[in-house]
Image (cartoon, rainbow, N blue to C red; front, side, top):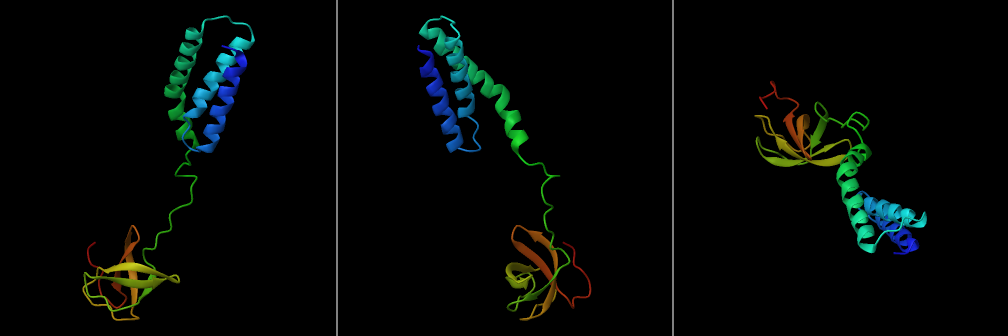
Length: 152
């Protein structure tokens, strides 16, 4: 094959990689095409089947060897990321009455949250409550006036 066909194919594959961020699949095929094109350019004479075999082998081998480590390296580490804001111990206000074990809503930090009354006493509307734990976007709360923290 003519060397410039491999180069164009490599550039098209690089563009596809840029248009599909985070996948890191087309990158290895692009590099293999550019390498085969560069070998053709410097005068390595081989039949078309050998070029296609080299392209396929280089693509698959580099994909299997290098994609995993590159993806892991590109992901942010837990230490470098911002710590997750824990709302445990924060005080909120119930929007509506919530019976023990029932779901309702509370206001905390200016936002309305789904909440479960984990205490033994009912929450009346506008009662203050303390967050025990967070599960997803649901807060488990107890009334401020509750004498003891129940077992979670």
